[in-house]
Amino acid sequence: MFRESLKDLSPKLILVAEVDILYDEQILYHKRLQDEGVQSDLKIYKGAFHAFFRLVINCSLRKKKIVGFMLSHQMLK
Image 1: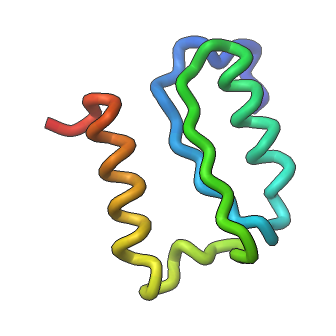
Image 2: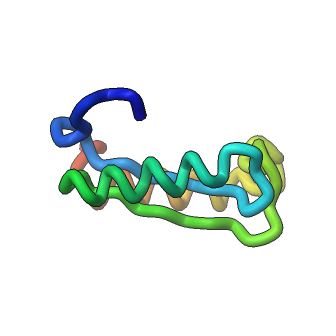
Image 3: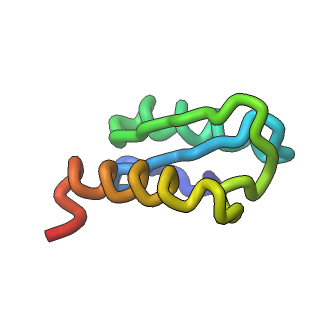
């Protein structure tokens, strides 16, 4: 966030919990990436709290979202 330019960054996947102390910062980061032409996918999980992705119950959801993003941007072979 503190870099002068984000233009040279690779595509980003931003997964945001709706009830997260860093919610606003994550939304601002996504918008800044888009403004500078960096591909940024944003998914907001309604009602979720900070660190919800660490829960075992969300393991397959997390893997699907991350692997799908990486495949779509040729980050995996």
